[in-house]
Image 1: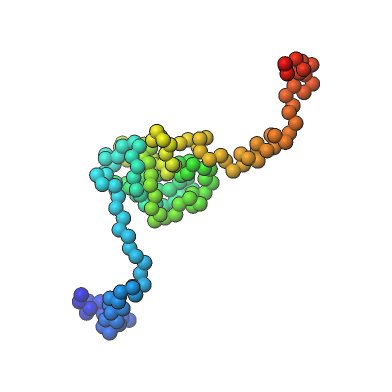
Image 2: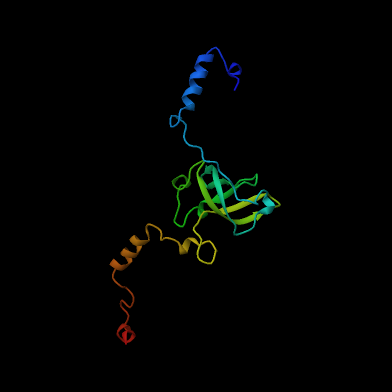
Length: 167
């Protein structure tokens, strides 16, 4: 390492040597551990993608309508808000953040427009992504159900044949 290339009026040669000496000490490196990230083997272009593939990816941008994920094909795919989780998601930032490592499923590949549609939902047993209706019930579902059960049963109310219908 040629220290003379990095000498500036603010940082001199002794400072650079001190920095290198501190970084050389084991367990004293102040930087976070770096984990190299690798994309799926054999998937290098958009033509390599097929519907149903499960791929690792990195969130590159979060928008109001979803998140863009880099899956290693030189084109980010979109995880729409409705495909982010098996529950209702109002704000994508509640689910993902930029630089987060995620696993996605390819839903659709449009080669003509170079668009990739992805899902982060948990897959069902048969490999098909679960639908929102099959997923975890909406948080207000229990409230609605309890309101229904608290209301008197109006079926048959003022019905002259109500007694006959019971038999």
